[in-house]
Length: 210
Image (tube, rainbow, N blue to C red; front, side, top):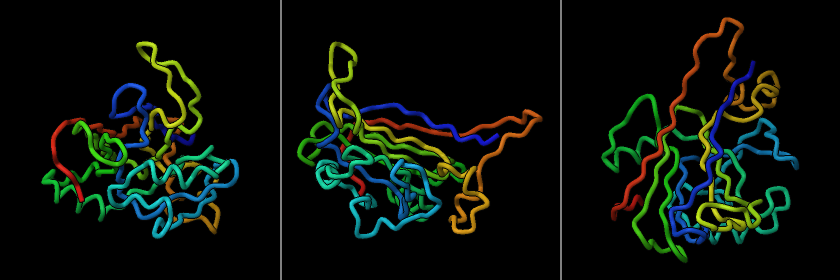
């Protein structure tokens, strides 16, 4: 059977209920998966260059969310899968003096902020050995109940979901599909073990990746 696990954890690095509009985000990717009107991957990878989806440098989320307000399919936000770029990830890891682990790559980084400016030094990095990272910006949150009586409205949190490219099981034999879609993880009948790695790193300091 086709196997593609991820984790749909919502989070925000700011105070409770403040949302993610003030956050800055960076995703180490040059391409994202095209989807149809039902948000199902078509097998094409599109360049982020010159688009609202370009998050290769630290980017103020609030500005991009405003640009996506008219996207009815995603309800006005990000709900996109990015193919992690080996070179971008490696360069960022070396620049930050993190070393380079051949098993995992730096996929994304976020920092808390307000109006695009850092406010508390809280930061998070996501590392994985999977192909891709999916960004979801809480577009369908609607007064969702949380801890301590907090209600989460639209953009109240975001998800960074490490995974392989979606819908690969239906695209692996399609001639027009990108080669990256033709490597789905298949678990056979002999119950061989499966493992993957996702690391969430949290800290608070003044380091800024440019």
